[in-house]
Image (cartoon, rainbow, N blue to C red):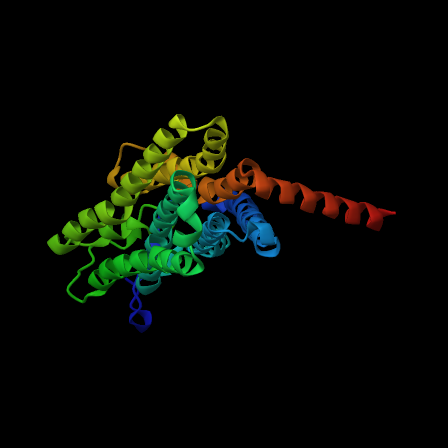
Length: 316
């Protein structure tokens, strides 16, 4: 606790040899952040400007990639500031705000993947009804739902943690940003918060995953009974979504378990594990959709070719 102006500071104690490697950390994470923004925005731009990509499937992909940018922006700016600061700290209020956005934007990806699986189910299993079911209104409702529900969920623990009844017995987080490690700051976790945490995992993680698996199981069954062309279409459009789901599930398990692990891992191992939460997944999505989705890849190659031609002309 810092009594200056009655501000409570939380110290981020997850860094390793900051004084020695601060500029290496900064360069690595700054490069990753720029790459995340550029790669995700490139795919979003291609979907925006090409009318043949103005279909529900590609709109959902664009929403997912925008969500990745938001997800990275909840942590990267503060990380970059910390790398260049003498003390790695954050006010308790700002810590709770980071916690809120991290658990608002992160789970939203499960909901976006769920509506994408439903879109693929209707497209492959009920192709004649697809234009009737997947209208612009339906797409808008799905997008609003995918962000609204996680936003409401994340607000409940935020309100509970902001309560004056919650007493802090620690002011150090064994991490580099405010994820669910904020629970370790409390003298005792309120029973209501523990119950809600278990309900939230079921409601915004497990249920969407079960819905996705059910949808793709139905797709697999229909595809197996159909022609080779239907099986090819199913594999081409569903495989990237399943790869992203697998990556996101690992990320979530990582995030839930990292706080439960106390002294079993060294500080260096914990730092490497924590960095993976914010590093590889936002980079994974644009490359999966850029290279595995045939229509997007076609436009991506054209964009790179045009950029190469312009660059060559400027050199002459």
